Length: 175
Length: 317
Image (cartoon, rainbow over all chains, first blue to last red; front, side, top):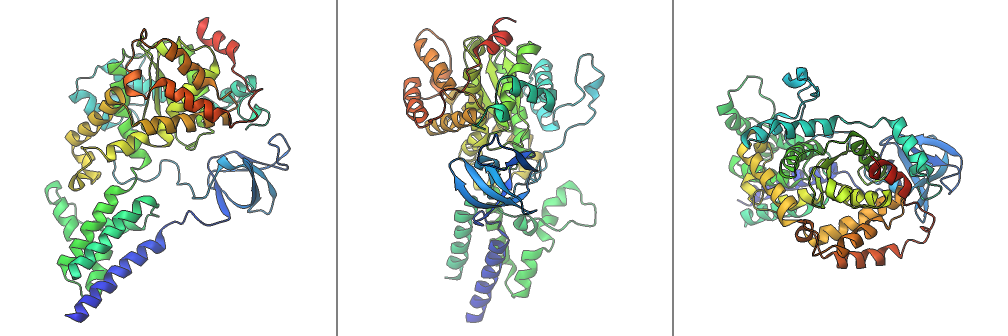
């Protein structure tokens, strides 16, 4: 009886500790990761100073110090520079479109509707199509979502837009 | 006593795991090993329970009765259900809500230039938000009432009625940034996870949504009810104001844009017909809180409102 209880205890602790061991810790003090592609590390604290290097999504840096909105960091290649804190995360970001617990994913790549005049070639997810069908939602509203998803802004257009408005990396200090 | 212990362990799991991320280990623990044989759908569930996995293996190694192992497995199932909804799942739910948004608010406002413009402004903000890798989509709804919505997964809507009321790009940025903040903070997902549809632990296995269109529809119904009728908690709206103002500021806009728009809205309160007033906290209270917040930003005097560009895009076309 007693040994059975002890075995249950060991079993519980084994699963618990095994799980905890595998948890990613957000509190690794000095290491942070780039939240996105193209995170610029500058030579000086001013974001207008020379760009030393650029990080890609998930690249790790060591945070040496923090001053206001900026962090002094050391890259994996040993370069030391400055970056906005909000560009970094202490938790390693998942790959884009990370895994989930259920598999409602996946677009119909070439939907039957692709041949429709003026329609897109993307198609909504099967779950959405089914839902819209069950709810008798008009085709035009489904198409509107399709167009919404299909509208992609090329990066050069966005850069020109930001430059013209002195926004983003062209804002002169804020960003 | 032993049962009490096992239950205590399960409770500890449930209490702590939602606060921390799980590195995929439990996914492997929870998942049954793939069966080599092709199972018919009716036997899938049974075979999943019967197939040996790591937990069962450990249980056998420790000489634990199957009943207790199953109890443990059940606890892990609850933990699985309490994990944050994955990004792909969030997008799937958001897409269905987006269809509802067009259906309920007059459909798409067809103006390619304006749509492109709000996508440029929206993406400028989104890339400095706290979820920069998500794909954000912005659309205009053909409704005269002033409103804006964010569906999970990056779908953001602004009514043409609201758009025409704005005076400059900073105001537009303020409104869009507020909506982006609802998505980065996952306010809607948090709300439905606490709501009645997903409130029952026994139904919390999200895998069920795929197999059960009725369940999927119930979740969307609850989301649309919150989004279009009841509104989110006031605290979430205030939180979105704070985060949105920060995003607009990061993007280089004058962070006063949202405050200025809300002032316009407050001035028209009583004359303006919009569900906005019933789905959001008091406009004057929001303005008051935003004013206090903006006073903490010290270097904003030279930041742009971009009035001329907004007028070029919206007012003249």
